[in-house]
Length: 266
Image (cartoon, rainbow, N blue to C red; front, side):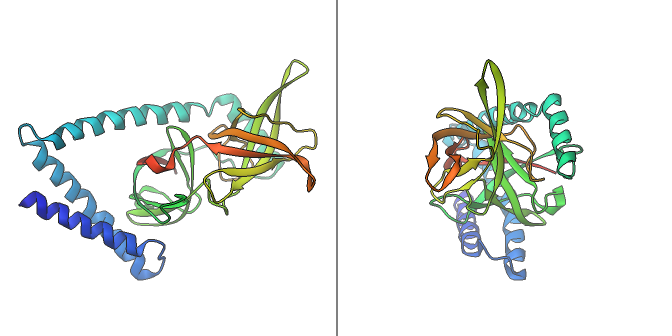
């Protein structure tokens, strides 16, 4: 009966959270903080109760979740390792040229869980259970083991609202690498969400080139996203009559429908 009561309480909390998602007024912020505050201990208590029951299937699921969390943690460490010293030096030089503050130095990762989605079709906006108490603020970069997730729109104690990289208002500087005359050449571009789960953009150089299957990573330009973070893969590239620049469609490497845990750079 205790387990049923806890589950009922969780259902009510999720319902409240869903109804309040997208509200940034004082009442909405207070309610979100309350939901995230109560949600953690209830889930933890439910896990402890079911985990102590012999033969409980939930206990087995808890072990599976633990292993998945360890795998995700390792993937996130690998993603962070992509920000090499060489890329950092290149980014600092570019940042200096464009008068952009150093976006990497002093950053540290903070783990968080995804708790609600504002749009269940495109997963463009969602909420995580960490906020200002962890140093997360507007434009904090959000990652997962598969690459770039997005940036923070707003935050308060215990929660932060995140715009995924597929959001139409989220502009991201990217780079692709190609072989030209036996040498590796980097071409820069800018992309944003197409509203349907992919990203669309164009290269900034008239001589720029990209091909289907190319890996796309952040360029570091724009002052928000550090260089070298995986964005996705080019699935379409070509020219149009409207532009002399090559246009590309990018499929994100992050599977947003299965996104549960993320890290924030603060």
